[in-house]
Image (cartoon, rainbow, N blue to C red; front, side, top):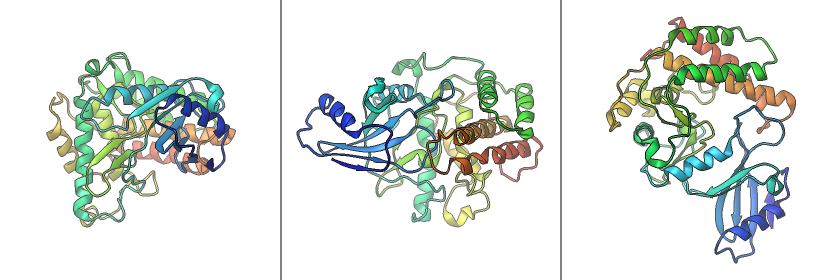
Amino acid sequence: MQTSGQFDFDPNVLAGFLRARLADVGDPGFSVERISGGQSNPTYFVTVGGRRLVMRKKPPGAVLPSAHAVDREYRVLKALVATDVPVPTAVLYCDDSQVVGTPFYVMDRLEGRVFPDASLPGVSPADRSGMYFAMAETLAKLHDVDPAAVGLSNYGAAGNYFQRQIGRWTKQYHQARWRDLPDLERLIEWLPNHLPPEDDTRLCHGDYRIGNLFFHTAEPRVIGVLDWELSTLGQPLADLAYSALGQITAPEEYGGLRGLDLKSLGIPSRDAYLERYFASRRTPLRQQLFPFHTIFALFRLAVIFEGIAARARSGNAASADAAEVGELSKVFARRAIECVEGRTDSPGL
């Protein structure tokens, strides 16, 4: 058995569990490796009997209610496998905490490219353009899926999405609160008073960005959408606005693009990206993208990163750099206030 990294579970127990449930694993080889990075559910490469898998588990210790729901991730992957939305094949889910300490699921490991850096280093300008447009087209495919047709009609509540989401994230902020953040408090007051009209309820990814996409090894084509932890039924324009935050945030702010020469890089402008999404939708939206959608996306991101900072303070973070990364909560709240005050230089706002 080969293992790599520090574990809070016994790899031998996991090996025995998987061998008992997976077919065609006569090869005695087994290895498990913690994937570095990430601030959410701990993730591991697992190879058993020659089969290459990925395991995602709920983190140990106390977590906020409804957070780190690996059962929901597994459910949505199973539901989307029959659609044209590219996702990894979900293999099994286990809620027995005796195996690895917390609930977990495993999925087949994809062979391709992941880019934590939104500028896509090492890629030609033409392929960068193709990748960003493929990102927009894939999001359009997701939002064209009828939740009821894939068994996800009860994957979230329908209607009043923004009102419910503002309430949820406000509650999460107060539950994890350990310091005063005036910008966040101001957003909590502003958002409920500026709710836009809502569109048809659709399946939303919740963390749709370039770093959560798996690309083909040689083509600018998305072969897998990853990290469905925040997925739910909701408003597609919220997902879209979140996916287009790159031109508003800087490279050091969770992999943004602000300040880079997008034209020379081959990366489409924000407006061009949005246009490709709208042109790719088979079920056209009835509403338009408002500044509210971007402000809400930044607000939600600020609360998420404040939760990361809170977990770092309690010693229950999923990443070694969580304390530093958690400080981005103040940055995203400030960016949102800039949008509220009309002081952003981002196009399309």
